[in-house]
Image (tube, rainbow, N blue to C red; front, side, top):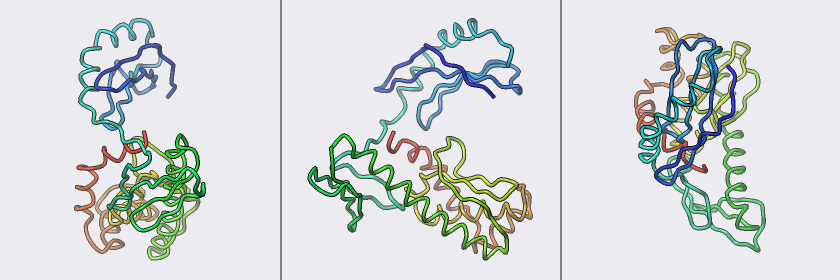
Length: 236
């Protein structure tokens, strides 16, 4: 799949997004989508489709696109005094311009120093580091229980998956799992580790997940369906 730049920009409801054009060998027709999580606008085209007519068609859909953007909740910035979800609870950002630039947690407060314009960047770095540390430890503990080996554990910010496991044993997660209740993170970890036993989603795989987790992860799946999109709006 390849990505091309576009000059088309759409604005509504306080959101402004640029159209991204993606070409796919699997696409048989044009597809236009507005991601409900972050408002990303994507036009998917077959590899040899002409770009000009496709952009004109996208422009003709402006009313639909901007209606979708207007429905999006506001993104959640991280600034002094704001609250952020963390492991199913909330932390309040306590900013002191003269304080240490090393972010630290004290109870339900996250202490941040330095210039105000750097607060969000520092909080995001702290959250990603916490996610990486905990997910690495929890993944390796689950792998030991399952009797499997794993490779590298890393965190990123994917749009479509909370976790993934490669055939070689590397496991990747969304750092946003740290924002969620620990049980949701645990279920996600077990799901990916179970793929080291079964690289599919058949009955054997689901049985392995339940055995490792000690329960069926229905409550956690329901939580993700209800609240997952909101987690993608944090720190945008």
